[in-house]
Length: 149
Image 1: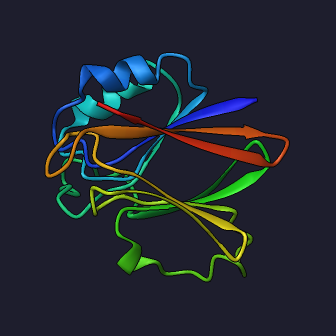
Image 2 (image 1 turned 90 degrees about the vertical axis):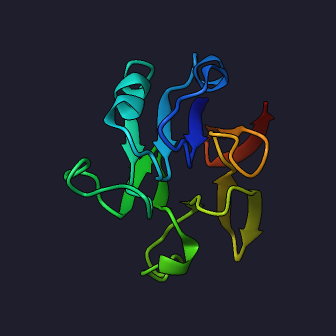
């Protein structure tokens, strides 16, 4: 089984609860609104990180971060973006199984046409309680669990 830590909207601060929640993950996915490179640097000490820019991220600070990313982990195809309103592909045509996004600061896990849509909420706690998600992938089976703090 592979465990993936998912977060979004850290807004400059990496809460200690995130570090605790992600201590045993195999990968980390950050759906943008990072604001400070130190956040990604700390996450990279825990596990390999996939990340995209959010609407408040400056491309001068994060020149190598894309705004959208398509990648594979454990045979599952992921599409990562910050704001669902900027979805620029047909997920089914692209073979995407999991879409990770942020922006709204609201938790979401919906399955639409066989595709998992996951928003971990806001890791910063701005506008809502702080939250992240743990995604467990085991032989194409997907389990999502939210951690609130």
